[in-house]
Image (cartoon, rainbow, N blue to C red; front, side):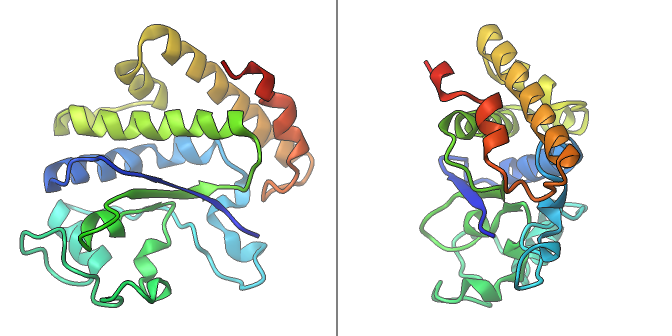
Length: 212
């Protein structure tokens, strides 16, 4: 019933850049959602707890609106204030707005571990598949960091982001791996494995012998 969560740091701690990243992920979440098992965003249907821990990102009007909704208080210029529901970072389960497929709470709050947490992956032992997703997450963060708001609002595809971030050879290889992710999801649906529990299917599509 677990998930594979990936924390990536090094992103600029600037409201404008964080808002760019949020908007980019919000725009592309249906595309990214097509690369994971169908019940990824409905964990209540297979988890014993009956709760959803990986919801879709809601839409917001601005960074200030996003911050107030996720943190529960207005933004006064600091990205190091503790979350009011977990001031000592000892009761993270009380911060309900961390339960999206991307968790921004560590980026918006506290003075340590300033990461973006991607929460949508199923458990896996397959290093090749993990590397593919690391490249995808990195591309999303790098694009948001280096592009203007107008570029974010006009992004039409994940492939566009990948081509803008990576050299042509790496970009084309990664797009090929994304096709494999799509095939994996189709196989999961065909085999009624809507939560992605069968790891054998991914090992066939992502052989670790291909890792260079």
